Length: 199
Ligand SMILES: Cc1cc2nc3c(=O)[nH]c(=O)nc-3n(C[C@H](O)[C@H](O)[C@H](O)COP(=O)(O)O)c2cc1C
Image 1 (cartoon, rainbow, N blue to C red):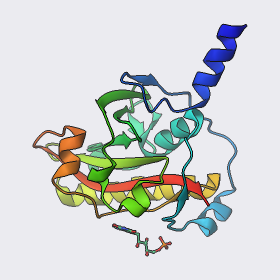
Image 2 (image 1 turned 30 degrees about the vertical axis):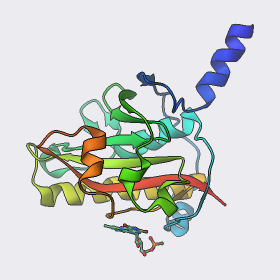
Image 3 (image 1 turned 90 degrees about the horizontal axis):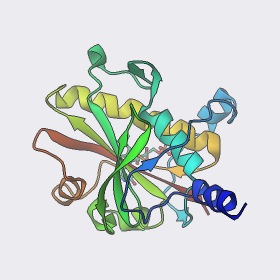
């Protein structure tokens, strides 16, 4: 009983302090605000109340942003289905890569990398920040910028539907963030997008 209770508690929260891979929960594909209400609520927010994001919410967010909704295709379109965009999750004490095929978080680095995100008045209070990273071997930077826009809008609509706050950000530390994410030379950060709890 004690063991079940403990695993239930663990599954409720993002284990941002874990230096290991994390299995995400299956996305819940029902509920949320009706589409027109979510579009009407879409907006940028920059002031968050610091709170940890439940694992189910993070699982849903990542699936909406760039998950697979068909065996080989995703919730967002890409030119010629190149699927050049991947997501990284920057938490307070760690960075993870979102393995969309496995729907899992792969551990990248342990530490507080928020300074690399820039704009600390936003980054420091977000629950998580999603970094949208392009593989420029797969598509051009122009295509990647368009693809990032689709991901960003899905995040905006998810946040609006869930009553969370978010803002697309083109401003981040251009040299520090790719290093923190341990990107290769063919990878480029296009946008970052914090998601947090509204005050
Ligand atoms: C490509 C792009 C880059 C942006 N970069 C930033 C940014 O670095 N910092 C920020 O606070 N907002 C940024 N924004 C958010 C815009 O300022 C915001 O969307 C705009 O003011 C309109 O407000 P709304 O989203 O609430 O409609 C960005 C938006 C886009 C689409």
